[in-house]
Length: 298
Image (cartoon, rainbow, N blue to C red):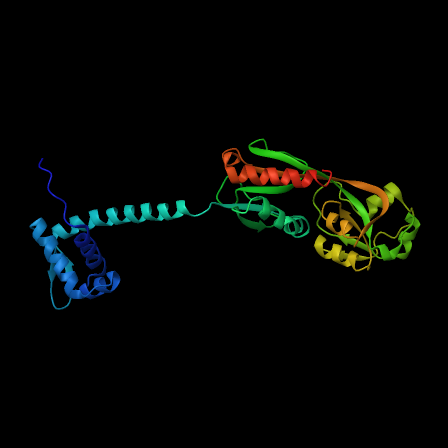
């Protein structure tokens, strides 16, 4: 079969626009030329193919059978071309690393340390997603996650970052000296702590460390640990808090571990898919996390 010379791409582009809009004027508007220029391109194309492509009337522009055949091809050609161009532009953009974690971890631990991350890896493009629902890091929603729990998913690349514990914290101005001083302060409760089990509650503290007559039902209840931490910093009461989440407040002297005992917590882990674990930005972020946690005695 003889291979014929292909028509000019500009003429095919003009044809594709006219066919889609069924209008020479709208095609001209799309491409940014005059209707006369579009008519010229169509005439060049029809002469090159020796085929009439449109039937023109006062009311409409319709395709001939040959035009229908060419439109089918031009639709595929320009779709493929647009996809290739989009990919070329995308390849020039830095890859974005999407991290999923809890709002409490994000607010109290990660955000204060972001300047360190940006200094270490200034080219890293990071997107932060917070929520309590586990995000599938094998899909497109997130590339990696920092999770809190006691179980490991063998299908994922998992790295333990920190073994948490819950400590009794208060503002230094409250000057707690012993468990008996808990009778004279407001107890802060954080609700809906599903991990660890059993929950680090005042009831568990009372049973483990006392005092035996502590009224554990009294106090103020929060549904967000960050809000409870801020209230404790303000000196409004005492809190059983994640040692990790209050570390910065401890370092700044805003809170202190009022009594030396603690209740067990769970593990903070970095997880990603086996495939994404090979990405350079994922490896860099994990390495930075390990160094950051090691620096605080993880």
